[in-house]
Image 1 (tube, rainbow, N blue to C red):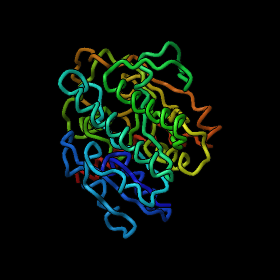
Image 2 (image 1 turned 90 degrees about the vertical axis):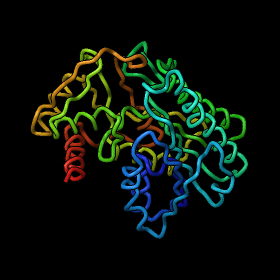
Image 3 (image 1 turned 180 degrees about the horizontal axis):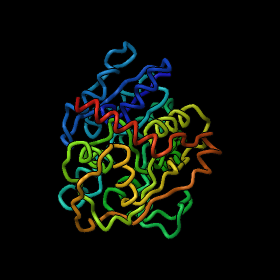
Length: 314
């Protein structure tokens, strides 16, 4: 298989790329290396992939580049590129989120429509649900985003469905529930929490610690992407990718202390606009359609991430 991976130098994109290369696929990776976090971290993510003769990297911006040429000979597009994070999506930051998450996705889908050869596996988010009426959420529950970031992810997901229903573009949208593990972005809670525990610095805890999150190990998220590319799915399919590891932030602090060997110092901060009280999704459709279910429990996944942090610090 020849795959196009957007956002290839990011957390999930680079891990997915390594998995594709390991099974013998060819990968064309694209990334515009935004300044959201340090480029050196992204370069480290793809250092292994660069050693493969089946990997090619192009530094381009999907908002402006000639996308059609990128899809020549491509069997599947793994669209991982996005402007992530809830807190910066408000106010002046919103334009970047619309550009990277909505405009880039529309241009990619338009190119896929014209190419008529590539399946598009889109990295959506549990943020589309917002504060859901019931838990665990199913794919048929009404999306109610609680942040501008969630709005842009849902808009891009709707675009996938529109191109599927109007043009037959084979799209699969994977709604990730808080992915964690080695290479996790430095702005994400697990990364900051484990760095705080290992370095003795403070971890910013927003709210009273009662917020519940469903965490998914990055290896399981990668397996869902591979399954989505290999399986015959109805165009416009939407699937939850949830790890089944729901835990409150207060309990997560205790688990992190056990795994890291020392408790982090906690800086308690007010609740942030856009944060939801809870996330948690069913994976019945993922089992039925993709033959997928998570295989890594939270303690094991967190241990793997701690080892990665220690290796980086060394």
